[in-house]
Image (cartoon, rainbow, N blue to C red; front, side, top):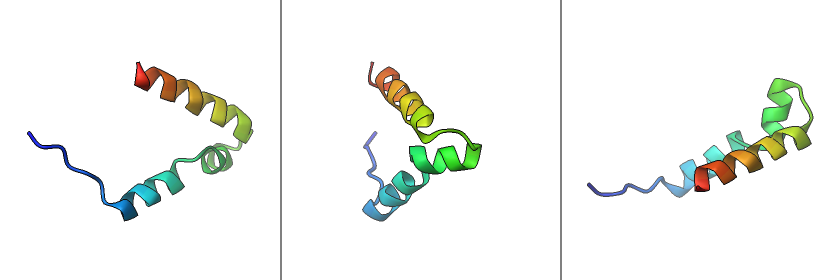
Length: 47
């Protein structure tokens, strides 16, 4: 099975959509809270 890469344009769009700032705006919570959650989530994924 080969690994498929996501096109650069789609990668940029994904990063734009999934940011602490946009998520905080959508959920109406502090962006620092969301950033902390994303940091912890990233840590768990890397394990």
